[in-house]
Image (cartoon, rainbow over all chains, first blue to last red):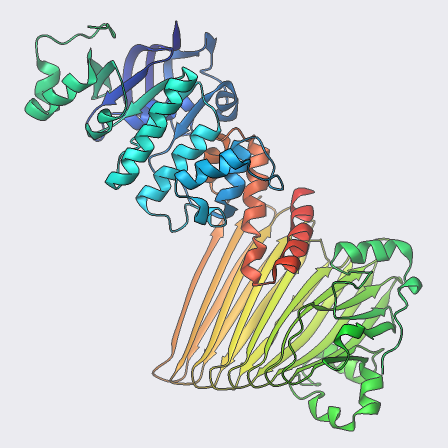
Amino acid sequence: MDTLEVHNLSVKVEDKLILKDLNFSLKEGASHILFGPNGSGKTTLIGTLMGLPGYEVVSGKILFDGVDITEKSIDERAKMGMIVSFQNPPEITGVKLGDLLKLCLGKTASDEFSPEESAQIEEFRLTNFLHRDVNLGFSGGERKRSEILQLIFLKPKLLLLDEPDSGVDVESLRMIAIAIQKYVEKTGSSALLITHKGDILDYIKALYGCILLKGQFHCFKDPLRIYEEIKKLGYEECVACRIRTREGWKVE
Amino acid sequence: MSKPTDLTKIPHKILEEAKQAGLETEEKNRSATFVHLDQQTIASKVNELYEGKLELLDIKVALKKYPWLEDYRWKLVDKDKDEYTKKVAEDYSGGYFMRIFKGAEIAFPLQSCMLISKQNLEQRVHNIIIAEEDSKAHIITSCVQHSNVPQAAHLGISEIYVKKGALLNFTMIHQWGENTFVRPRSATQIDDNATFISNYVCMRPVRDTQMYPAAYCNGENSRVIFNSIVYGHKNSLLDLGSKAVLTGKGSKAEMVSRAITRDGSKMIIRGLIDGDNSDCKGHLECQGLIFDDISFMQSIPELIARKKGVEITHEAAVGKISEKEITYLMTRKLSREQAVSLIIRGFMDVSILGLPDALNKEIKKIVDAAAGAE
C-alpha cells in the first residue's frame, strides 16, 4: 500500500510556478531518496506536503493514508503522523529544548523523562542542551541532532527529512543516519529524504530514488545508482539519459 | 527589635492575591517579611534564623531609632523632582527600611508587600535599603491592589545603597489593578565591586505606570543589571525605563527588556546608559512583540559617551510574533493557539532574571499563570 499519494501537484511560491504537475507515491515501510540541485523545488515539495505557509497549491491533491490532506492544517497533518525535520529550524527565544522534547513525547513541562528517553537524549549528545533555548547558538550538528530526536520522539508514520546531512560533522551524520534507519526498520514507517550527498546512503537502506529538476521528477530508480550517475554526469546529463524512467518507482 | 507578623489583618481575598504575586505567608522560605496595607505597616519581621544578619523595620520607626538614617533619605532621589516626590515628601504612611549586615549572606529572600484595599486611596511610601559591605541578598517585593478596588494610586520612593563588594538582587512584581495609577521613583548607588540586579515583572493590567529607576555606578568595577518582563494588555499604559550612569572605573551596565503589548495596551520602553568613565561598558537589549493594530510599542534606547574609552551597544527589535516559529511548533503537533502560548511563555523567560532556583520557579509560575490565562 502507498502511504502518500500525490496527484497532479503544481505549486507556486510568490507567484512563481515551482512544482509542475507532479505524480508520485511513497510506499509503506520504505525509504525514498530525493536528489536534486539547489533551487530544484525539493524544499518546496516537503513544505507543501507538510502544509507550511508560502506554498500555494494551484492544482492537484495529496493523500496521506488514503485521506485527502491538501486543505488540512500543519498540526492536523502532524497529528496524522507526518513529521518533518527542517533544514534550517528557527531559534525560539526562551523555549527550552527540554520542554520542546517533552511536548514531542506528549508530556507536559512538569513531567520527567523516562530512563529510556534520557538515555536516548544522551545518545544524541543533547543532555547539556535541555536547558538551552531551542536552536539558539546551536552548531549545525547540534541542530540536526535536535531535529532528528524531536522527530523520533514524535513517532511519525511518515518522515520528511530535508537534508539531514547538510552542515553536519561526520560523527553526527553517522549517528543521525543510524538512528533514522533504526526507527524506520523498527516501526515500519516510511521516509522521504532529501540529500545532495551520497554518504548518508551508507547507513540508510533505500530502494527508491529519484531526481527533482526544474520542478519535475526524473529517473526513478535505485538511489545508489542515481548518485553514481549524478557524480559522473551531473544532474542535467543524468536526467537526459535514455534509460530514464519517469513513470514511477519499480524495484529493479 | 522586630514586631510580630500579623498577616491575619489582611483581608482574605487580598491575601490570596498577594500570594499569587509572590507573598509567602508561611514565611518559611523567607528571611524577613514586610507588609504595608493601605496606610499602615502591619508586619516587619525578621525570620529568627536570620536575626543578626539583617534588619527590617518600618521606615518611621527606623528614622527614630537611627538618626544617621537621615543621611540616606532623599539623597538619591530628589524630593523636588516632580509632583509625586513632593507629595511623598509632604506626607507618607511608612515604608520599609532593610539593612543586610556586613558580610551576611542571606540564602532566602527578604519579602515585602505593598497592598491597597481601599478605594481612591493614594498610598505613599518611602523605602530605604542598605546592603552593607560584602553582603549578599535577594529581595522580592510584590505590589498588589485588591481586585475589588476600582481606583487607587501608589507613589513609592525607594533609595537603595549597595556598598563595597555587596550583591543585591531586587525583584519587583507589580500586580496592581486595571485602574491603578502608579508612580514609583527609585534610585540606587553602587559602590566598589558591588552588583545590583533589578528585576521588574508586570503581568497584570494597570491603568498607568510610569517609572524610570536610576542606578549610579560610582564604584570601581561596580555593576548594574536591569531586567524586565512586561505583559501589557487591557488598555494598560506603561512607560517604563531605566537609567544607568557609569562613573566608576570598570563599571558595567546591562539592560534586558522583554515586552508584549496587546488589547489596546500602550507601552514605551526606555533605556539610557550614560558612560562617563574611559573604562566602562554597557549593553542594552529590548525585544518587543505587538499582537494587534490597537496596541502600541515604542523602544527608546539612548547611549551616551562622555569619554573616549566608553563602549556601549544596543539591540532592539519590535514587531509581530514570528510566523516561522509558530509553524515550526505546529509541525510538532501543537495547535496554533498552543504554539503562540508557548512562544509567549518562552519570550517571558524568567531565567534571564538570575534568581536562585526556588525563587526562579516561583516567579515562573506567576508569569506562566498570567501568560497562559489569555
